[in-house]
Image 1: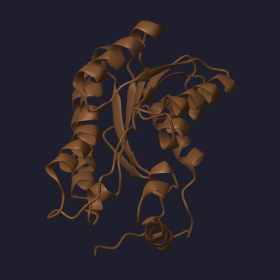
Image 2: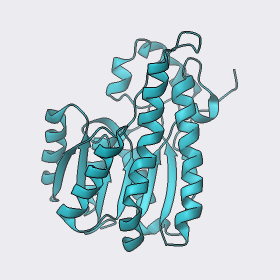
Image 3: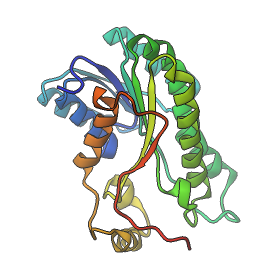
Image 4: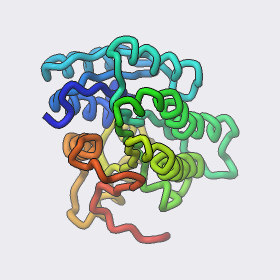
Length: 250
């Protein structure tokens, strides 16, 4: 199996992309640290799926925007399993608004979760990743390149995350640690269903798709697994756009 006996932390893994990634990693032989911020019941469901896949997992509550909680997350993971082989920085939030209407609180919350969070967890996990010659995958977004209307905070956080990916790849490559980012396709996750303009978003995304389709959650999760595995042992510092949307600048 691609991740046999490896241990990984998947942030924001109580649902959506994080849950799918945790489950697929478990199916490939990995032990999983399930991270959540608020919804413990959803985290328990992820745990059930991981165990059904024949693997082991623990649940650790942590708000990735808070440095002390991230430190505890990493420490708890290592103490439980004795190693850390990979990170999937998936946890993220969206608080959309025009710049002129965006509150400082909404700007700060998104930047702290989507950019500070990955920085914190990478920093604290580095000693363990050096030991295992591990891998990191950061979940980015096309907003980081497109500059999506009404998403100044989110776009800035994802653009910064891709820059962090490249720098971390350069710094950690000499220790055998790989760092990549991947931008997901349009997938109907929980965040989509909570969005006020979900119908408009879906119509636009499908209309821009060369295949005229939605993204598949398990398909995307398996691409993350592929980047974590030894099958991409010479790939680092890259951002992959995992979709078929034909973007135009507007």
